[in-house]
Length: 96
Image (cartoon, rainbow, N blue to C red):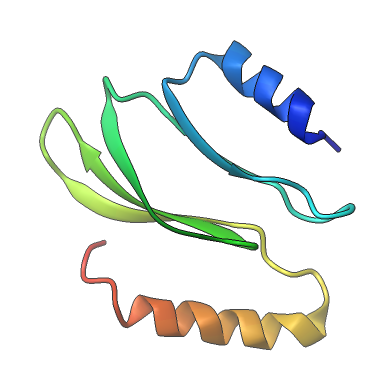
């Protein structure tokens, strides 16, 4: 498990120009979304405890998509609620 300070150091060493992250919660989760603006433009649309939702534009050919980085629940009792949340989110997304 990587704490907040170590995560920031590692991300800086990787050399990406932009990033967003969700820290771990006890021994669960932790999401990193990293990109370089030379290749793509990324705009964070929403950030929640289990996901980062980002609008991505390819700078070369202007293709657009939505990217969602997820840390899904491991317990079966939590999965149904999470899947329902993702299905609701999908109703508002018109991009691939």
